[in-house]
Image 1 (tube, rainbow over the protein chains, first blue to last red):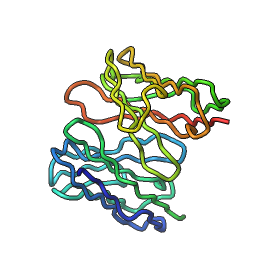
Image 2 (image 1 turned 120 degrees about the vertical axis):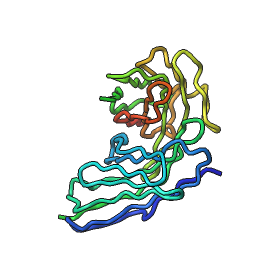
Image 3 (image 1 turned 120 degrees about the horizontal axis):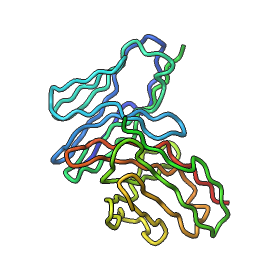
Length: 109
Length: 116
């Protein structure tokens, strides 16, 4: 059965304290590993799509990486405005998304 | 680019009434649109997938007669919650995906439905 698992459930960091979020996946015929950011009461905002192991993408303080079993979202020197829930999803062979439960990131000033 | 809008952002209705939510792709043609429901502190639950001009495909457990989906054009899909009840209160989010070879779904801002 296709599955995506995110860890940790919640992560509290001080401003400037770098860390990583984990997304483990088992999705047969994976068509992309997607990262989104969701703020409370809003729809998810697209961040990255990764297609093959070894691929990396960056956007401001965020960098996403992909292996054959996991994806990591690295956040470097985060700021309070980076606080949000980060969602990971695997695209299956029907182009539907298998969602993880999300990691709630809180950055304290 | 890739902007998706939803209207209304919030709606409060009485039990037994019907509510329509619109989802529009503003700057691209969406061959496929998706409707999700999200409960507090939970991830997204796919309700249905619709392709322009075709009937929607509903996920197991989603009542097609209660949640009517129409995808009449490449930029507009609507979700109508018929005979709404308090248990239908939720956060509804649509997403849109472009044509063949486009994998990324772009999401609308969501609609908060409260049924009294």
